[in-house]
Image (cartoon, rainbow over all chains, first blue to last red; front, side):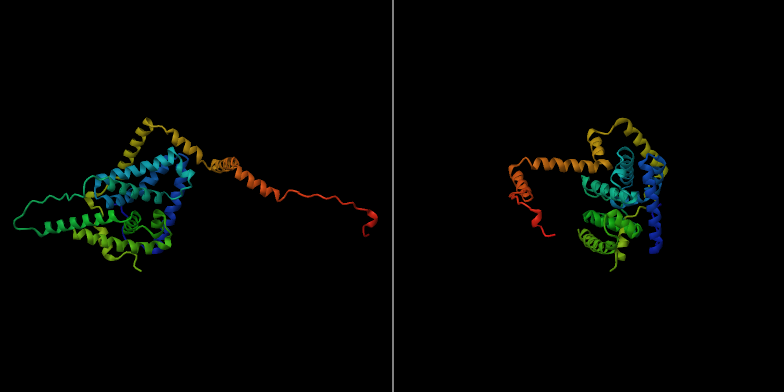
Length: 204
Length: 111
């Protein structure tokens, strides 16, 4: 799985952010001039993390893949057909991608006609099976987590998920449009709000 | 202040995709995106509103457009009598109202 895993020290993560941001800026400049190879490079760089963010929101692989493609189609449209990145002086592709992915994920959640479904099918076992019970409990927890995330304000959900995916403070700040210095405080508030909503969902 | 407590991290980790929920390969996904781009390029062209917006927000044109809008607003404002009256009153501050001529004799000037 291509998610960014593992803990990094603050300075290493910040250096990675600086390199990635610089590379994105150069790629963006080339994309605005019609360079398709730069689009491919951006795709390979961010595809896994965009998918990871969307899957965490939606919980469905097919839906997350479709929306991931939609995000990059939007990028292609804005960069090549409408040249909006050049015109609006957008400099951070990563921030734009994760912001767009979160917007699309939330739109998909709101557009759902039915409630969250538990899709685990159990074959009744008269003797009982601790393994199955544990799986059911895990599924219920996951459902409650996603319900709680869907009820949070979009920015709080985005911050929590991006931080859980090991995005740096700088990346979180750019994607959410906040000052880097306020990310810690905002995360603490989001965490508190999330736990409250999760406990409400568990109680239902 | 802790940014995100361990319990929240544990719960959010439950939403991570498992191995069988991993996405298709990036190269396959990219090929699909390019295929859709090709289909959309053939079937759609920028609408007139897209073209108008692109024209208006082009870098050099933004400031020219703002200037033109400012001039038009000024012209519109001066169509109101009260505005013209206020402007006239303001300009009268700099207008010469009273004029008196005096005669200067050189032999009466201090040397």
